[in-house]
Length: 474
Length: 105
Image (cartoon, rainbow over all chains, first blue to last red; front, side):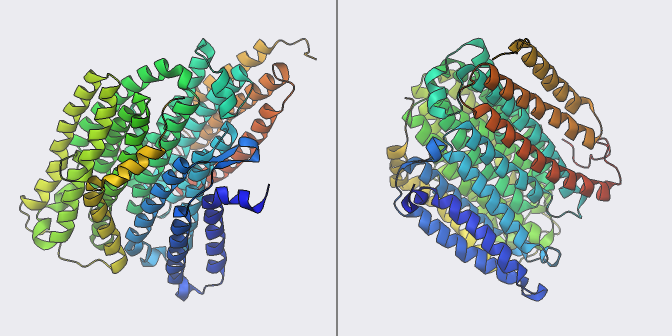
């Protein structure tokens, strides 16, 4: 193993280094100088993003436990961009006086979870996968309970850590059965000897339930709304975008690479789960009054759509999933960015508070409208193309009824997304949210997500690049 | 190399432990006992790994390594969970699940 081999895991090494540097810098800062941690974190993370985009070698490390391919590298780059936008958008909130003392912890915890997710995506065996998963979830609970003096945040933290610990337990039981039936934990060996014996199907179901917890698919979604509502908004957007994106990436990689001999089984499982997820997510989103809970249920429904692409089991399926996650990052961050900008200044998160927002804050309203259109999938913006490719790949695999159900659900979702637009543009309010200017960092974050929502859909090179790297079943 | 106890006995024990853990997690009202139920689940996984390794694949040590790592991770998880539970106690003056219900539906 030479120095060059370590370049394969540059994303992870960089993130761990950044986290350590931030801890050391924080030690040397006086209480009045604490805000310096933000530019340091930003600059280091920008370097990290640029390094991530440099051409990457392909290969495996540690006897196959860790692997890196251009596809995996691109998944990490997609997530990097999302994290950067979240960092920009959290500026106002993190600068509040009550967060001053623990400013660096926010970044350190965020980078540790991100490193965990990258190890998880790059894993070549179930041990590394499990370690990455836990490295991603444990600091995430600390992030959820970040504003620890607020009862809601504390409640979100405990709900997240207990339900994710339970789900990892279930997942681990599945892994132990996989080990028992194949004698190996390496993806390649397991894939070679994994059939459809009853015990293996059972193992797969345990494994899938654990993963479904992480992506918040429907019978396992109950923690989502509470954790999303209780956590600080920027942490919520991190959960709903980055954590969900990373879990979808690794789930599709494992389904395609390890469990491809079980395709009949997992296609049926995904069919049922995706219908349930879309229907329940949409129906519950209809009755939400709180913006964060509303976006939580909308993100559950979006996860149901992601399953459509996974189910196809083809190269196009994988492309459409990655492309959809990319689009979803921009659209959801647009929506969360507006919610967080408004909450950081005024503290308001109810949908009725948004009445008449267009008169006072036209630009925020326009971005929110774009984001809602993109999430709903209305043609000119990127969300339409994301959904379109997902539906196409599911239809090309022959799931016409499922696509029909999905289209019906997309129509239902249009109703509640437009409710927000209606509140901002049509509803009158006696005391709308007064005009305010966000700081430059937040505005840059909002602008980036707006550009992403508009441009990604028309820029077909993005789709082609993803398509060239994606793989189908073996 | 195998003793007089067949593999099935270990699997029966571990499955019982797993489902009593799940049952405990769903029925107990105290956050600490819920955490203990999760430990039960993780230990059942450990028994599975070690038993499979010893009985079926004695040539490699994957199962043992996995067990060691699961133990370490479980400790980290318990540390964070207990810290958060202490924080819950400070906020709610209770660690009963019924009291921690500010957010619903």
